[in-house]
Amino acid sequence: MTATLIWILVVLVAIGVYLSWTAGRLDRLHVRMDAARAALDAQLLRRASVTQELATSGVLDPAASIVLYEAAHAARQAEEEQREVAESELSQALRAVFQDPVQVEAVREAPGGEEAAHELAEAVRRVPMARRFHNDAVGAARRLREHRKVRWFRLAGHAPFPLAFEMDDEPPAALVERVG
Image 1 (cartoon, helix red, strand yellow):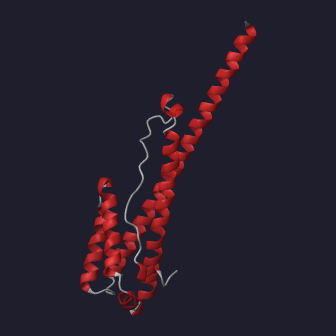
Image 2 (image 1 turned 90 degrees about the horizontal axis):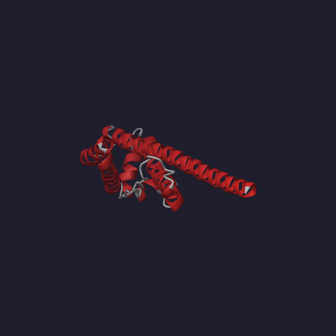
Image 3 (image 1 turned 135 degrees about the horizontal axis):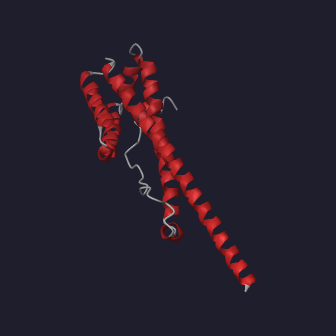
């Protein structure tokens, strides 16, 4: 009788340790996901800021400046529900303005244009990487949260279900090919 109780106690402690380890792992994944989201937000903000700076610098023609400025402003001011759409529209505006290598060369030849083009190219190239890191962290957290043990024992607590950030983040080829 005593040996049975000891074995039951050992099994319960082992299950408790395993569930505690799983909850800790899930918590670390949520922290990683939050850090990746903060990095993504910083890269998106940097891209929009650099775009607005370039649009107001007088280096671009007026039509391109207006298109870029409005898209960057909309991306910076977008509510969370509309953020993916606004960031995709900024990507599309960047591709539309910088689809022609002649436009990129015109920017580079203007005073201060070389630094501005380089800074924009770097900002545009970092967004897909930051989004990929975020979505990888989201995928890992989702996979763990879908396990039965996590759902049955409510190991995720009250944390919202993680959502990937889906947007069009293809950089303009004419802008990034010369930097790369």
